[in-house]
Image (cartoon, rainbow, N blue to C red; front, side, top):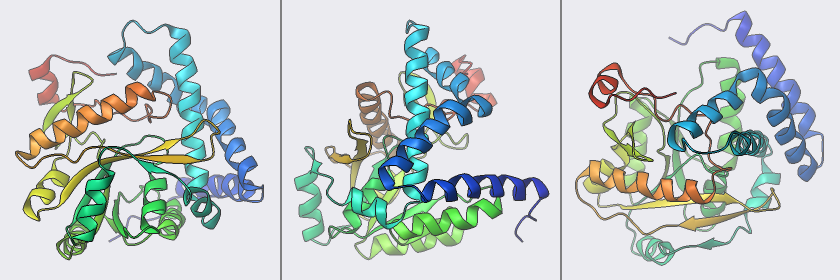
Length: 301
């Protein structure tokens, strides 16, 4: 049974729909810039995101100057706002992502796997705009299934699901039924896209920025079980703030799933170090279970 819609849910949804609906009336380049500025100037302080970004940066970069933390926090929250309105922009976003160049040392292997009918599991991160990958590659012969985590606010969730489905389908929820459908898609030689830099306390403890970080290993398990290519890929925002380029890293060799996802974490870390103002430092990436905190002796922000 679905959770009931509360009065607070309705208010939050009305506020979100008002901001998003108003922004969608603006020309595409202007709306992206405006929502980015609104998020960095107003939403981030109200939500405490700036403090969280600075806390995460201080955790992994203890010597970083406060001014640099604040600069990155502004850029990061601007990118979060841009990403959200881009996802809601439908065809305008699809048109913007379509000419994105695809490059990187893993691209030839990906094309070869697709030509052979081999399944592909793309693993990306909250870097730049991850949906630029789905939008671009789905229309270039890589129809990509994706997982989404249902939002706690059911009112907001309904139109968010419609927005991400417009960019590319199919999309499946992270429940048993959704996972079964996703696996069926993969077994038939399909392509998956998974945003794997999430901190689930039920996941194994790996390393990220040389800190303990719970990291789901299901993407690697599926790749091994169904002989799929496991490929890190990233949708990087270009300096103009509106366009993208896709970077395809070297496919990860099959082996122990934990070791495979550690390799993924290492690749993501390299990209985040190169583009620190594009990664979603607002996430609680290093949140640990009580047991993990006791074992590691770490107290994440």
